Length: 484
Image 1 (cartoon, rainbow, N blue to C red):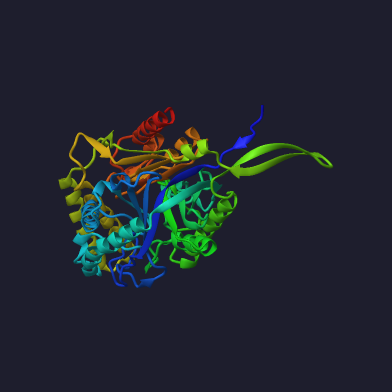
Image 2 (cartoon, rainbow, N blue to C red):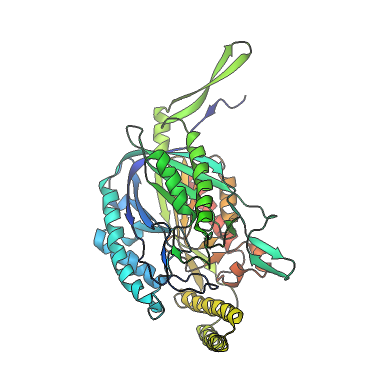
C-alpha cells in the first residue's frame, strides 16, 4: 500500500526570544585576514546582533531543564575570552554556564577580539568592548526567559546553492587553495524553522545553513555580519518576527562569489539564502497539522485528494518529547603537532622578516610575510589553551525535541558530518549547529582530506578519522533515543 500520511515535523516546547545590538565601535582592531593591509574597522556595513533563545520542555518549567542558545554575530572567541564571556553572562543572569550555548555565525568581518592584541591599532577598544558584552547578552537572556510561552516549531527543508565546495586544486600553481571548486559536491540542504505561539502567530524563524560567512575578506574594512545580515532582513520583513541564524557544518563550504570587499555581494548572497528560507516556510501548513490522503473524488479524472488535518492527541504527545545529553567525545590529537617553543620561534622569525620587508619597501613580500606572521600568531593562540589530556574532549550537545534531532558542537567540521547525519535520519529534521562556545579544536576534515595539502588540514589539531568517529558516536546516541 502506498503512503497515505505525511506528518509535518513538529516540536512543542516552551520558547522565548530576545535580541540586542552588539556592534563594535568603528576603529576597533578588525584584521581577521592575513592578507589584509588595514588593521582597523573604518565603518559599519550592517549592525551585529546577538539573539537569545530560551527553550524548555513543553510541560516542564524547571529552570534546570532550560537551554539558552545565543546566536552571536562574531567569528568566534579564543578560549580565554570565551570563558570570560560565559562566566560573566552566567553570573549576571544566575543561569549555570552549562545551560548557556553561544553559537557563532562565524562572520569574518566582526573584528578580531583577542585581549592580547591591545598594542595593535584599534586594540585598545577590544577590552572595553568585551567588558560590556556580557551585560548585553545577560539582558537578552533574561528577556528571552521572561517571554517564554507555549510554542510550536514547524520544520521545512530547502536547498540553497549560494554556498559551494571550496577545496580547489589550482593546476597552474600545483597546490590546493581555499576557494570555489566547481567540481566539488556538498549537502546544500537548509532547514527553516517557523516558531508560532498559541494564536498561530509567527514569533521567530530559525535558519540552519552551512556556508562560511566569507563573502567579505581582506579588502573589506567594514564591520559586517556578512551574508547573514541581508538574509535576516529578507526573512524578518516577510515574517515580522526575529530570525536567528545557526551555522551548520561547513569546514569545506564557502560562497561561490566571495573573498571580496564589495558589501553588495554579501547582501546579494544573503538574499539568495533568505528567499530560499521563505520558499521553505511557504511549504508549511498551519501549525500542528499533518497531511492526509482522504480518498478519490470523481471528476473529469478520478482525483486523489489530500488535506491538512489537525494533529491527533497521540501526535501531540510525540511532538512534546524532550531529551537532552551533554557528554564530550574523546578524540586523538594529530601526530607531530609543533611544541609551543617551536611555534613561538617561528612567530619571532616571521616578525623579523616582516620588519625587513617593511624597511625594504617590498609591498608584495610585506603582504605575504604579514599573512604568514598572522598565521603563526594564530597557531600560538590555538596551541596555548589546548587541553593537555591524552585525548581531546570535543564538546557535544544533543537533543531530541519532538520529531526533530538537534546537535551542537564546537569547532569547524566538514560538511560530510551534516550529509551523513541527515541521510541516516532522513525521516526527520536534524538541526546541526557548529562553532558553539568556540573552536579550540579548529577544523575537523574528512579522513581522505588529510592526504591533501589543504589549509584546513594544516591548522587541524585532531587526527585523521576524528570526523567519522564523531559522526558514529552522535549517530549511536541519537539512535538510542529513537528506539525508546
